[in-house]
Length: 115
Image (cartoon, rainbow, N blue to C red; front, side, top):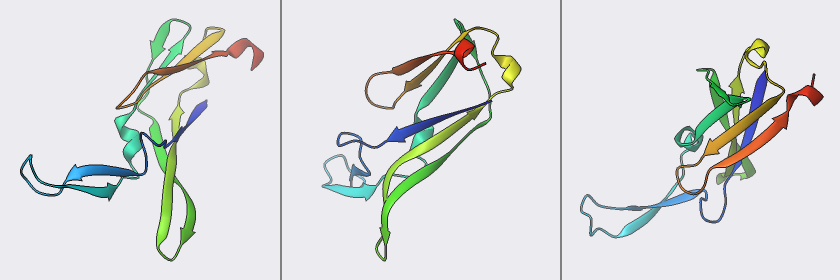
């Protein structure tokens, strides 16, 4: 079983990050592109009913738009989390995503309707 999660960049968590340009805390700020591996900073929790299940089989790839001679615009990422189907014994599942900034997002699924 595979769960795919689309992470979309937003105006507050966009394709560029602001960082100091020097080594001192009073250095001027510069802008740099966000890493295409940004999705690794998110935490993903999967629940079978009320019991959390875990896996190490988590992969992801960046999503881009507007590709041209100057490169592409990072728009988000798709994360894939794989489990053996037998890992789910309940009729419900919950996916919880914790971003590096902001509130936790969770979605409940009725697995009985998918079987």
